[in-house]
Amino acid sequence: MQRRRAILRLYLIIALLLGAMMLVGRLLADDEIAFTSGDRVYRVDVRTHCIAPLNLPTRSQLRALGWSPDGTALLIQEYEPPAINNVMIYRPRQPGWQRLAPSLRASADMRFAADSVHVYFTDSRSLFRASLDDMTDWQRIYSFGEVLTYLLALSPDGREAAILGTEEQGTYHVYRVDLATGSMTPDVTGDSFSWSPDGRQAAYSDLKRIYLLDTRTQISTFVTAGYAPVWSPDGEWIALLSPTDPHELVLHHLADGHEVTLVHARAVIRTLAWRPPVRGRT
Image 1 (tube, rainbow, N blue to C red):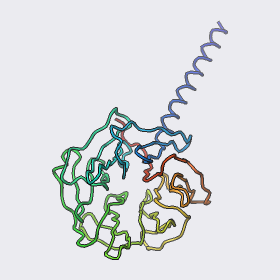
Image 2: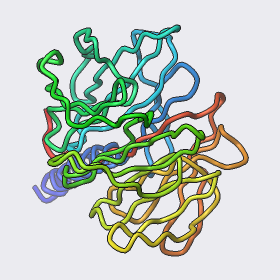
Image 3: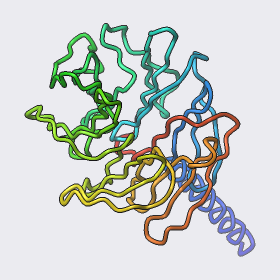
Image 4: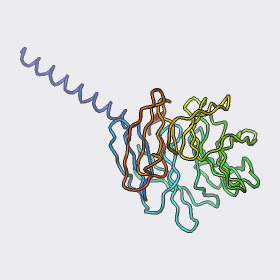
């Protein structure tokens, strides 16, 4: 009898350990970065460094991508020369892809709104908002006049958009647009922009140098060499592309400055996006 109880206890312990491992595995899988390299999209687990390619129904050029704020969907844009942009949505918890209905205003710089069911995008020097359920039902938010624009990021509270603008002289500037009023304010000189999770700071790059911007005082502080920074969901790290090797994705710890090479890809890495915590599983 005692031996049988001991065996049952052992089986119970093994079952609990397996359950815990499965739970930890699911948690780890949610801490990931998606990036484009060549004509493919990859997901890399930040803790284990394991890389997995996504099975895309295309081999076209892949450009901008971004996670929804709830962490359940990934926007990916494919470019078919000379000027065809298609946007697809990938949901890790669901099989297959959703290709957005063809629209006159299909943009290469589409980003999820704070509610994860609407998107913002720029086209013809204007900023638009549309529903994923009906891309033909779009709303013009603001027109930028002579400034050529590209949507970089939306603030965590959903109130502002960071727009990359090029003026006639060819200088890149980041502008912040109030989504309620449409007013546009020049911010920093740079070519990328990523808000911190609490919105109090932003990371941006200029001439392969990364800075942190205090969004209240507008004071910038140099951090490290690199470009295309994105903020981690916990606010402790930024992911960036190496200033010397465009095949390398690097993690920079903001507290002590140490860096870890997370990925060395075969092809040049062009865009990356750190997945937010998953708030609603489907």
